[in-house]
Length: 206
Image 1 (cartoon, rainbow, N blue to C red):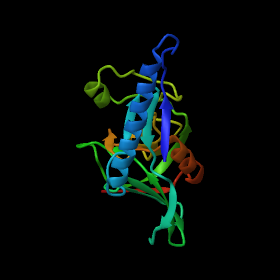
Image 2 (image 1 turned 45 degrees about the vertical axis):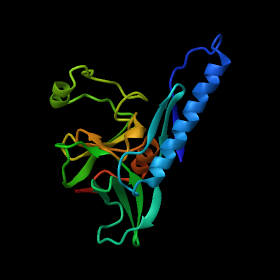
Image 3 (image 1 turned 90 degrees about the vertical axis):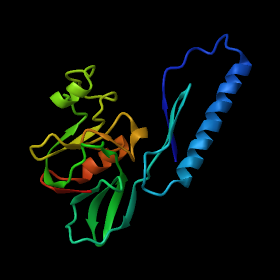
Image 4 (image 1 turned 180 degrees about the vertical axis):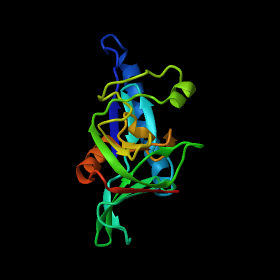
């Protein structure tokens, strides 16, 4: 599956037609190359392909799907496999919903068990002191919205700083790019948000 995020593009009036056709050809060739690369990679490993074009970012999508998942965990439990870059929402009866995710970068990965302590729609974001130290240009606070890194929804884990949340950079899913939080596409995190209950168990495994 291919998605595109539009970015502003200058008015085409006055631009040579040949140049415009050339840009379109580059876009198509790059997208096809990205898809071929993605199709040749082992399933479930690595960041989705993406390609910057003059018209926006083209990127692959990790499909949400119901899979066989034999487990002793009760329905409603969330299991995160950081090595697989996948999150499983246990349905019971040997089934689970599997979502693609992004996880913590090198040095920020973690594992453990916690519970969902709160849920927020279009959450605000306040970077931690550590994040500001590493990225001094970050805003000190950002209101919720489409440009917010936390995306459309957030599930807060206990009294920690970790969350399961959406993203405004879906082309980074499948990678280890975060500061420890679990990122999902906005479509997927809305789906999970509507299913998961406050108090549900969340198990993060390496």
